[in-house]
Image: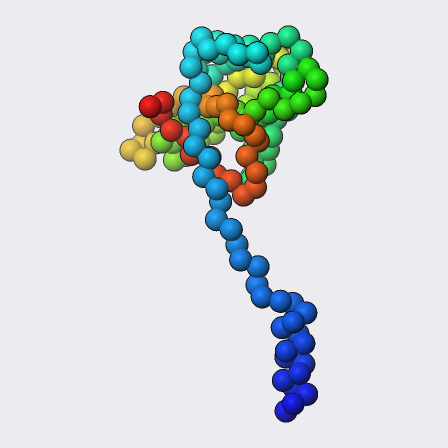
Length: 145
């Protein structure tokens, strides 16, 4: 019996306590403001940016592999923040970032959303936030206050 207890204690010590799962951090993100201009971009529309000279973007895949966000890459290689494509209050969405057209390298947001009442909405760009957000994270798309 003593050897059984020793084995059980040894196994518990080796495997240790179960790792506690951390809840995702909620990152609140707001829609872009049309006409806003920074050193990285100019907002041409609710779903389109014009990048400043030398600025590139790197698309960031979401938890399900979808391409819904991107980080700005400054000309010196540094990060310039994170933006995402989504809808405020959207419960179902097919939003994604489009940036693969060499003749039109500026990022755009395409797709649509359906809210909790069944109404359809176009996707919009949200951000920027310092980032990208670290895992685990959950974006909460909010209407502009």
